[in-house]
Image (cartoon, rainbow, N blue to C red; front, side, top):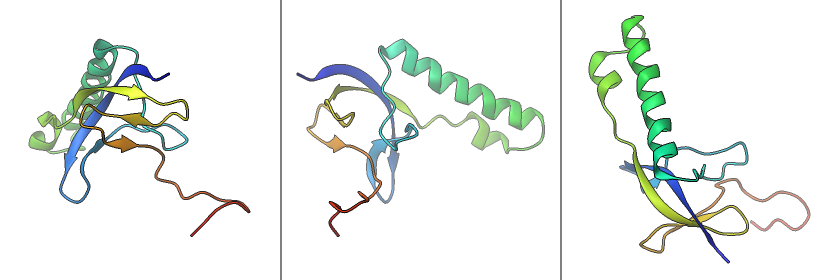
Length: 101
């Protein structure tokens, strides 16, 4: 049975709408609730603002927030499905003797 969760997404030119935060296995990071995901976006924004204050980032780039939170279903393998039925898993190619090209 699928579990509900929340992921951070971004709209891209090449790939369309995709999860923007991934874990060490390249799976979308899933947050237990919307607030936790929103806090992750806010934390990244504060980092960018500090980089601006330190002179390491342009102002417009620092204040622009393109990420947003999407409710998803989490599958047993750690991949997710959004409300439109789009499936997102690891983008890594399988390795080992069972891998196919």
